[in-house]
Amino acid sequence: MTTGVWNDINATMMSTIVWKYINDTKTSTSVWNYINDTTMSTEGDISVEEYLEYKVAVLINKYYLYILLILGLFGSISTLVTLTTMRPFLASAIFMCVLAVVDGTALIWKMLYLQITLSGIQIGDFMCGFFYTFGSWTQQYSNWILVAMTTERFIAIWFPLKVSKLCSKTRTIVESIVIAILIFGLNLHFVWTFQEISDPVLKHSCAAKREYTSFINRIWYWIDGTSYSLSPIVIIAFLNGMIIHGIRKARKKHRDLTNIRIDGMKERSRQERQITIMLITLCVVFCILTLPNCIFFVLKDTWNWNQSNYQIALYSLLYQIVFVLSDFHQSVNFYLYCLTGKKFRNQFKTVVMCRRGQSNRKWQSKYTDHTISTIRNRSFSAWKGSESVCEMKSTENNTDATNFTISSSL
Image (tube, rainbow, N blue to C red; front, side):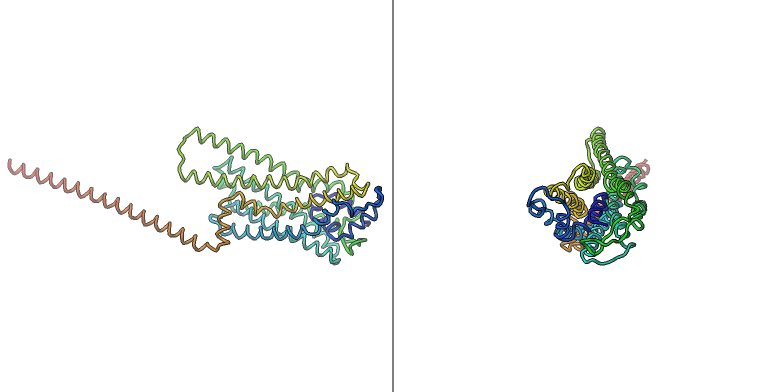
């Protein structure tokens, strides 16, 4: 199979291409030279390598995944450590932990596939299919976990009396497992539709089998794009709109009912607002970072990018940018948590400063002081109550004595 066909198959996948592009672009400058040599130049002596767009694309191509891997792994590990030390451990924290694990795994998987490809290691047909299955699964699964988190917040805003039942920890775990199984099953076809091939530039690479090329190009193209980005974006946009509307409606209702706000209700409202702001921020960033990927591959068929060296250089730059944005989405969540969640940010600071013991002692001290104060108040109330009883009894005795004296004198 030629490089041209290989690139064409690459360009027909959405979430798969997000990590599959490593195979044909994440190698070395020789890959770009090969493309340049096989393309007719219409611009004289100006080659692809001489264009600034191409140079920037190669620079991004060479370093960005390593940078995102460092940022992403640090963020995923920090998220897990922070969430597991927070109390109480809510159902929404389970989704956040799953998201951190999946995002970190996706970045590691891309790097592993990159190193195998660059090393020319032969992995066989089954492992080719498994690499694509698992790689595409991590891309889609993290997006649908975000959908599940948005759904949980929607229920909390619109059906607050049913939150404890519909959004319990057990249900959250079950939902995460069910979503994982469904999406893994959707991508399982790679096991038998892909194979290992010999590449003119790389020693070994993976590509669709000849009999499944039409399926990959015409059917899976839209299935994958819908599952990876289009459906999550539409659902998330709708639910976030309903969440914002629900918050405004609830605030108006509270203002109409009373102007008095109890401290406990105020604190709960503040925490709910922080969680909602954090989630909406995640969703907006998700849409901004993944939507260009879909737009690029939907519109690229209308662009004759291989007609000149400049068009190839420009295509290469845009190609890299959309993948940097898509991969950046899996590295940025932790930093968004810190930016928008005060409680999360404070807990992370506590973990970093190793102040957990101090915070626990501080909490215990407050609890002890509160308990002592409560006991004192109750003791004082009981003493005042007994004093009143004694006074009443003394009054009764004096009254009885007076009555007895009067009756005796009579």
